[in-house]
Image (cartoon, rainbow, N blue to C red; front, side, top):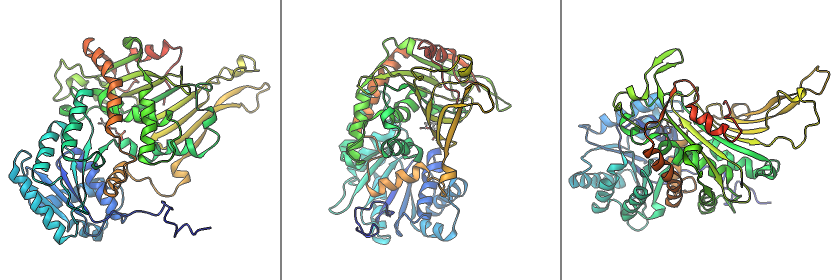
Length: 506
Ligand code: BG6
């Protein structure tokens, strides 16, 4: 047998990015400080970046290279996952540059080009650069146009250029297409990386591993055995300082269009021929294409806004009283929808998707809830405390998997059965802590590995699902208020109760 360490097909060997650099637009934003810059340090710390790696910040601040390096340093000290090592930082900081520039000014892009070319000479980045647009999507067209006109988007032979965009990928189907046209005017589809950070989470990738590496789940993974699937992304915090981003976007565009529909696609898809980007995308797209929208949107969706109240013993303001939110805002902070899939595997199985801010606690999970056994040879009393079997992917924060099933209560004279659970906890089974989603995704961009990045077709299919719902909501006035710290508006409970079911209490 071939020695796996020498076998080129053994893709477990860690891959280190080749010579390259990242140009970061939006360096002063929350995402850059809390996620992107710390993840770059964590990658350097784990030895995944090339020795001459370069990070160029571009913004309208009066900073020099040292000022920007100090900003990166603070972000790293505060938010990096891995320990701080002076020598790693020194090497990384030697490749840090700053361009004080205006996004609208061609001269700034000429300066950026000079800096990039100098890095190629001094740090050996060899013309391989990522342009990371961590900026509001309204600014994408201007930046992309300038990247093209300045020649920055155009690699010479043997070099590469890539662009990274963060969601929202448009506001609806039409604007998503417009965005694609803008990006594709300067970059080839395989040079465009759309980040949905959920796809970089270990626990999300594990959905495919668990489904397709084992024999025991897949035979029951269909409408013969599954009663319903509940996908929940709940947060206990409000919108914080993000009024400018959030108002007019809302929970459905912010989370359902991307994270939750992706989770649904991974849970429902057929086995791909391989885990190559193309094969996985094809299967996900089939799921999204099979979605049947609720016949009556009012009955099968729900939305709400958090009201003032108490959370964790602290008084909190309602959404409409948040700084920067107009008192007349109709933006939803909670959204729930019921979808079904028109295919043989899932016919008749509802997928309930819900997300919200200021809910009972922070939790994301995918719960596959099974049908009751066709016959229960117990007295009614003996199974009073038996609910439905369930397999729950605990995406976060308590990462793992729970299987819920019935078991005999010890010491009872009859076969009394009660729910128990079997838990897999990452912390118990694996020594290393999981990398942050951004570490995985940024490294994949540098390596040019596309499987975890949605392509334009998936994005468009997701908007096709959401657009009719959002249009209907736009006609139907103010969302219902819900108590902070609870689990959403009454209409969400009514929606699922109409099907004779109830939401899981995560
Ligand atoms: C982001 C949304 O995509 O995901 C935020 O814009 C949300 O509103 C966040 O808070 C949640 O991410 P996570 O990884 O904490 O579940």
